[in-house]
Image (tube, rainbow, N blue to C red; front, side, top):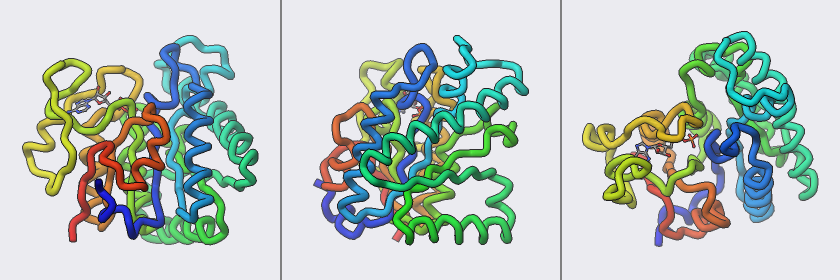
Length: 264
Ligand code: ADP
C-alpha cells in the first residue's frame, strides 16, 4: 500500500491525455470522459480539491467539423482546436452538472507562465476557483499556442499547474499502467516500475516515444513533468485511465501506477 504518501493529500491535479479521451477513430471517447467526471466528482465530494488538465480539444473539434483524420495544416488544426475546446467544455459542464458541480475553463500558454506578472494572475484566478469549490478544466490555449499543438503536450503544463496551485499530488492518466523498463507496447518483456525515488539518467533513458500515435508526449514528457513536480514538492503518479475507479484506488493508497516521490 501507499497509504503513507496519500494520507496528507488534499489538492490534486489530474491530467488526462488524448490517448485516454480519444477513440481509435480519433473522436472523443464519451464513455471515458463520463467515467472521469464521475470519479472526479466522487473525490470532490470527499473533500479533495481537484484541478483537471484535459487534452481532447482537437478530437472534439474533429467530430464537430466532420474530419476523419487529424488536420496537418496548422490553421485548420488551430480552428479544430478552437471549435473542439468549447465542445469539450460543454461535455464536461453537462456531466459535472449532473453532480451539482460548477466548472470553469482556464486556457494557459506556456510563455504566459514564464512571465512573472501573468503567472501571478493565473495563480490568483486558479486558487480563487479552488477556494470557491469550482473544478477548473485547464488546457493549453491551442488556438494561439501553435508550437504546443505542433510539438507539445499537456504533461509539462500539468506539472506547472501543480506547482502553481501548490498541489500535493499530480496524477497523469494515460493508456498505460505506469512507467516500464521499456515501451510495453513494443516489448513484451517490459517490466512495470512501482516507484521512482530519484529521476536519474537511467530513468530518463527508459522513456521511448508514444506507440499509439495519438498522444503527443509519450513517456519523455511525463518524465520531464515528474522532474518539475517532484522538485516543487509534489508527488506524481502515472496511471491507467482504463482501470476502473483508478482515482479512488490511487487516493486510497493502492499500489497502482508508478509513483515519483517528491523531493523532501
Ligand atoms: P497520453 O496521451 O496519455 O499522454 P502518450 O501516448 O503520449 O499518452 O504516452 C503513453 C505511451 O508512452 C504508452 O502508450 C507507450 O506506448 C509509450 N511509452 C514509451 N516508453 C514507455 C515506457 N518506458 N513505459 C511506459 N510507456 C512507454
